[in-house]
Length: 378
Image 1 (cartoon, one colour):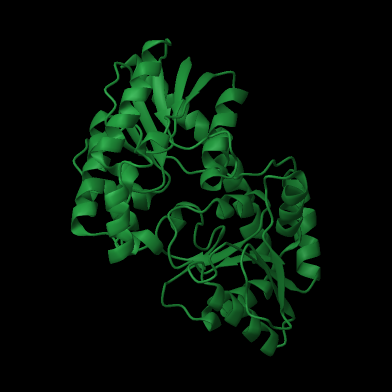
Image 2 (spheres, helix red, strand yellow; image 1 turned 90 degrees about the vertical axis):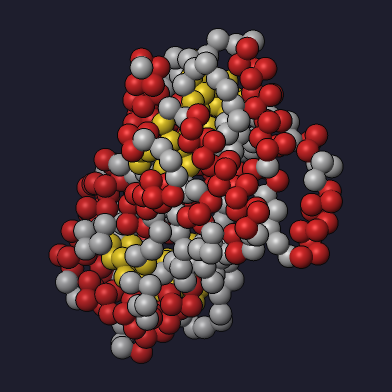
């Protein structure tokens, strides 16, 4: 198979989009797939939207120029030119944007985490400030990509159901494949068992990883840790990636890059030695950290929102609390689980098993390749 990997960002850069394109590309190449990266040049668009950018700054409205027809046609023209000079069996993209106007004679597939309506009013930042006109442009871009794709793959059932309810597409075209952990995992279940005995014998260590303290629900994690200590359960909240309020029970570790060997080692050590991964997120399309927690058998306490339940199985690999849950509710479920060590062990091993079966890039890319082969055959 010869595959064109299309992306408007460099997929060989692990810092792009949480490393997701990087790990997909690496897994494809690791399987011996002949992959050629096609990354359209965006520099020519830099000055094409100056009036719109100025207006956007004045009004505060969001502007997503990559979704505009001019940009889409620009990407499609470059990709088409590359496809003509190389013999490819299929086109793959980790985004719906670059292939939205692509007229290819070979199958086109994309794998992403959400469509625009799923993010609108749910995620913060630009997704809270879109005008009706910009939303219409974005919707048309998403629909155009769906029309052209042999399969549109989403990282959660939540995202796939959003597509089915708001867009025109045959149900069979929209598929779900979960993302995987961006860490190398060499341990087995026996190691998880050994880690669990150390976790249960130590003070309670709650791990929080995220760059957005507010959106990831840091205040609730903080409150839960405070309450556990008030109840006589010695607990510490280790915070990675963002700032947190100062308190005796908080350990602020700053940003740790998994792009370095030392950073990856530190993250793996934290996952192996913590008692729970706690992230009461307010908005989440997928969450690579859930895959990585599962990879280390670390039970997760999080929120029932967005795509979370495709990664954390409530009562099986962790707990998905309602959006209305307070810090006290998070403290309760942690305390109850610590009071029942066998329950903790079951959650941990079930999480690791889910990682091995589903939440890894090998499994995800295998499912992706199956769809690509089906599309080529069809």
